[in-house]
Length: 297
Ligand code: BDR
Ligand code: CA
Image (cartoon, rainbow, N blue to C red; front, side, top):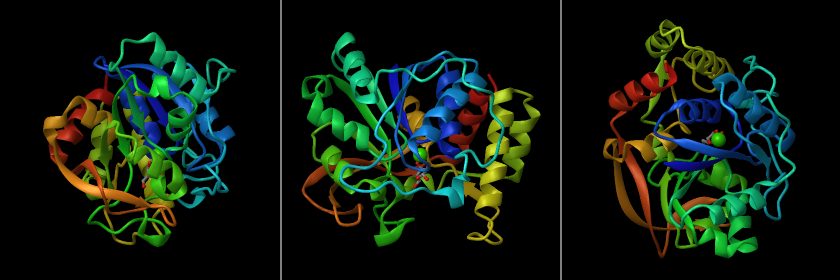
């Protein structure tokens, strides 16, 4: 499958990107960046560094530096001032592209057959909302959109009971949800079931593979960064890796259709008119095995 990854790396973004870049079943044609977990210059630099660690050449296109009509706010408490929890990544092999995210997505969509280019969304949906308004003829050619975001029956993880990605840019989230795309949303209801513990970190390290070892270091950093919030909790959720995993293994997720809309004052998902495919459950053990296998290659 062909995919553009739109991302705000971010500890769990980095794991998702390493997995997708190394997977023979996914051809990642571009990384597009957005402000989210950390500001745009850092997410853009991180995207290039993650590609370098994966040993893959892929263009990085900088996108939106702030949400639509709001100020950017960072998640440094979780992802650290460098967005990667202080884990060392190599320098990017190439500077970021001079073509911005929306123009790059539009060009790639127009160059591909309609319906074959998927979007993997790991951050706030600002770039996708901009694509919908700035290049609607390109947006019509998108294949699947698989996006980590929202909380349906679960509590959120930011103010207003929202989830971070939707809460960071509620207007963009509302526009994307209502756009009639072939969208599957993976909310906290599913991602909180996909967890890594100390045994899994050991398994990652034992592979001896650079992407797996970097992933173990990232999860370790995530443990340290969130220790104050989660005393005694011995595992952590891996949100963004669920996106490429669902694209590859939809059979390992339980997807339901729910009528939803985005409350634009907070970014929370609330009952509404848009029939939306949402992953509400998953086979955590099988998916952990798939992630381990992919990161070891
Ligand atoms: C989402 O928010 C970010 O902090 C993570 O990278 C993930 O995309 C989880 O709510
Ligand atoms: Ca993210």
